[in-house]
Length: 492
Image (cartoon, rainbow, N blue to C red; front, side):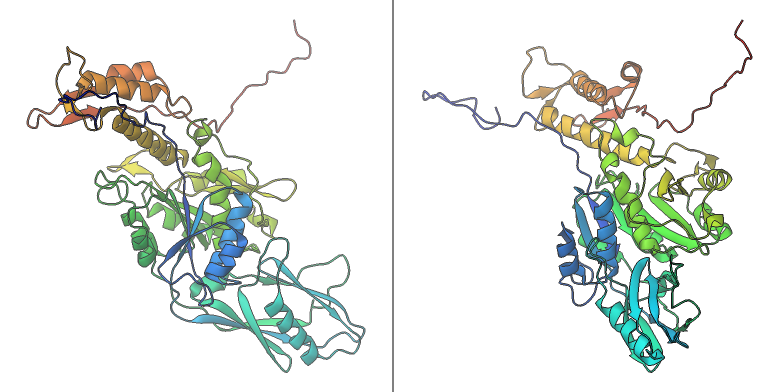
């Protein structure tokens, strides 16, 4: 009884009220990207975001963060999501669309801007200048009422030329797709529009201000729109197990995800250069016709598995994730850039996550992994699968909670013959560890073997300290089924 003294004299009948302890896991997601000055979220700040309306108010219509939130919420309807606004820097990309000779009879013209259809009905006799003006107005006014998506460009028109300006500064804008699709009927824009980039986007942000804003709040999933080397170095150091969020001094944990679009060779080189289990890349090919920007891809992918990665009590965190359909993103237009088995096998062996396209044309998760490849120079796959850091996060949180419930504010003794509630012994602590281990069958296995190997001893130099060796045998995802089908003409 921590609040009722043991030396009272006056009669009293009293109860002290304390929690018996009830552990509940959290799996908070942070989306890091660009917002607009029209949003209320300041550069370098973070804020919780529950709905599309919140995203638009915080980050601005058509912003990177708004698009990332829409993609994430579509794949994780009940996930706790926060936004972190990284200030843009550098030069905004500027492109031109020149309208050529318009068919005299008019018709329908459709332009896909980052996968969103901008449609115009062109009347007979419309001029190139009038079509350019209508196209610019349609781009500026575009809003998808089903998804809440706006476009990442603003537009102006002069004579027969539409000028598109990216809403944010930075090199990211080179990946914004603008495409004339094939329709069931004739697309008037085909052969009429000419595209050019007059000013390439330049510059990369620095996410350190957003990371600093996290303070000591836990964010288990950090989804960054930026995969440049400088920001990846910041994220890896932020999550470091020596001095970062995985260190003994902080114990906040977390994992970072980022997109990268490049050639297969360059993707492989980049992944192999980062031997860490704190980062996960969602790779895409520089060619192939990807409609949605890569920052939408990474937000959608991570959100799709967020519910499972937070599910330790029921074993969801340990599941194989292959075949999960990622909502709201499109397969590459060029089927040559759909990942086949050989490509997926090679990527996974070199630190890159993989995806596939099913027979319906849906993009699906194949296998999500970290960049870990070695430990002390020797090959090591312990932390390769994405499930592992999240299993470990759940297990460590559960152990810490159980130890705090049962042994917080206690005295330490080698034995406790009088069974005093104020005293804990190494044997008591071992029992807590074992029973907690036993209580996580969806995360840890072989508890009886673990019991034989758990060591709890008092430190010989510091009698106030307990040293523990806690082996953890994790449940593994069922990734591969290899069977033999023996064929007979007739059973004998």
